[in-house]
Length: 254
Image: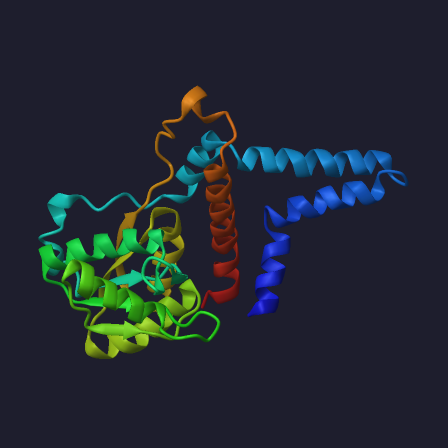
C-alpha cells in the first residue's frame, strides 16, 4: 500500500508537475529548450489546477449522475432494499474530539444517508476499512457518527475495503446472500460514476444519491479566473477520479 501510494502521488498531478519543474532545473544547461518545455508544462499545469473555473468545468464531465430529487426520497423503499454510504477517510486524532472522526466530505455523505434512511425507512450499510491498519474502521466511525449525531442505527458494517472496488465487492458479500440487490449508493457526485460501475459489476442494481457537487457556479470574483488554494485541492481530487475511471474498466472488468 505505501508503494502504491508513492507511485500514485508521483505520477498524478500535482506530483508529476513538480517533477517536471525539477527536471527543468536539472536540464537548464544541457538541454535548455527541453528544460523550457518542462518548465512551461509544470508551471502551466499548476496554474490551471488553481483556477475555480477549471474545477467547475472539469467536474461537470465527471458528475454525470444527477441529484436524487427529494420528491423521490419517501418512495425509495419501493425501488431499493438498502442504503450504502461509502467512506472518505478520516481525520486522525481530531483535536476537537480527541479521536479519529470522518472527514468533512464523509460527513456530507452521512448527512444525506441519514436523511434518506429516516424518510424511506431503508436499512443502512456503512462501507470502509482500516487506514494504515489502525482501528477503528471507517465503517465503525461512520456508524457511530450516524447513531450519535443523526439518531440513525446502522444495520451492516463492511470493515475490510480500502478502495471503491472493494467497497462494492465486500458489500456484495454481506448483502447479496440476504437478498439485498437494489441499493442506494451515497458518495460525492464526482465519485459516483466509478462507484455505480463498481457496484453494478458486483451484482447490484444501483440508485445514485450524490452529494458535494463541484460542477456548479464557482461564485468567485472575476468568474473564477484567479488562482485559489481550494481550487487546487479540488483539481487534485478530480484528476485522481478521472484516472480511476480510466483504470477500473481495464483492471476489474469481468
